[in-house]
Length: 209
Ligand code: PRP
Ligand code: URA
Image (cartoon, rainbow, N blue to C red):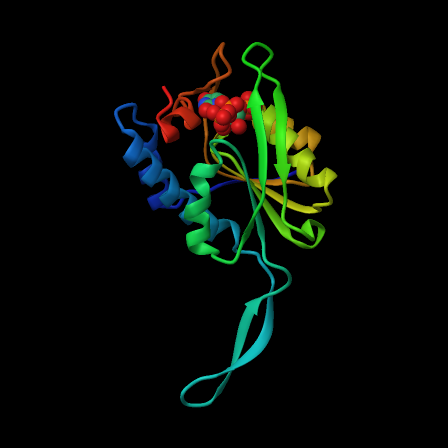
């Protein structure tokens, strides 16, 4: 079963408080989501394997280390996942970026895929699927299926706020996927929104409500 890592770094928790606050406007919300995504990227990449190399310093040759293998692929779930991409790229500037487009049918709450474009050689890359919200887990599971169907084998999921229902669904349907979240909230309301959550992440990022 996939492990759930709750990233407790004080900077992440502090910024999340202002992301949640209903009076935080679009500009600040967007900025804070990018900052938290950057800090989460630092934590999620802790276990990337290194390979030994060497480098000529101005003084002598030094033993040194670089990250092994092909560059990582970020896969934001459209559209709210886009709000985390630049923050992660600030930490991992060489990362390739794929996109999975999904929306939730407002009646059934089930995800509908409308777009998928991934970097080449996805099967050789560490893949991080990114979405601020893990509510019922339907979107995350569909995004994980979309990347795995196209060959990805080493996949992690990064979300800001998760509901227990979403975590359980990912663990059932994608037991190989570890989750990295900033908070696990109480549950879902009758509209499928995370409680207390932060509201509609896409709307708050893009000012569409
Ligand atoms: C939101 C969010 C997730 C999904 C989570 O997207 O960004 O993708 O809901 O809910 P779930 O876990 O119940 O599937 P939404 O469908 O509102 O689309 P948007 O990003 O375009 O606003
Ligand atoms: N999508 C959101 O943007 N917010 C939620 O609370 C649940 C799904």
